[in-house]
Length: 338
Image (cartoon, rainbow, N blue to C red):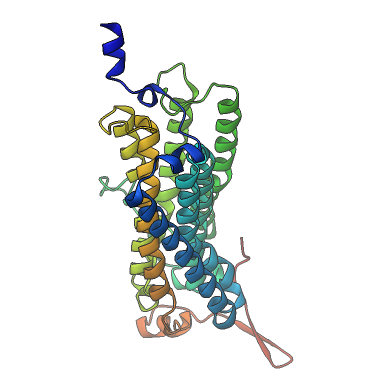
């Protein structure tokens, strides 16, 4: 009887470790191999499209914006590449997922800096909105607190917004490194969500830091969406949000379903390993589409923004910015940069 009971549960279903690459490839049928080939081809195409986009950026975009645009455009191809590696080598999932998470943490900060740069840089941004206020009643922190007063736009408030995204780009790699160190010692496991385990505490800290980092991006977007409408900031922000939701929320939901064994095991995969396997395959297809859409959105010709003096003259309530001429060159007196 015990033998029959044990026979109903295949050995891989009780295993905690994903299969080796050779075990996975040996278990694939013709349809599985065809799917692997198609997804790998999608990843290669996404990488080639990104390389072509980098060449375009270096040829057509001013040097002050190149680095920011390359970082933001690289989010989808990098996630597709790490997912493809995790699909082929299931035991590398922890490292590939952490790499994608750390990279996107930096992209969040770069996206905020890109919006400021599209306004002409920090000095121009402060001059355009010197009498304005940031609307802080926005997601993900305070979207329900509509009664919150606006915050005056100054150098200090802009510094705090940039610090809010920078802290995530700094602390996310630190927590990921700590997770890997604990994992090598057997103290970290995503399937162990007990209070005694390290995974639940690290996940909570990372979730808090993520919310804090996303809030400044939402505040800045609400402030510049009208000004940067000619630069297609709305579809750019939508693509950024899609990558965020698919890479974080979708992955978390699939992992939870796998840990609860709602996603059944399928030899040679256990439930948790199969959840990661499905996540990688879905992400490759999604990031491939986002890469193609990003190429369309970011390669358009944009109208340059009017100088803040012109915009102010139309409103009739702005002071002229003093200008000093040195040897025929015009230098504007502005605020020091961050």
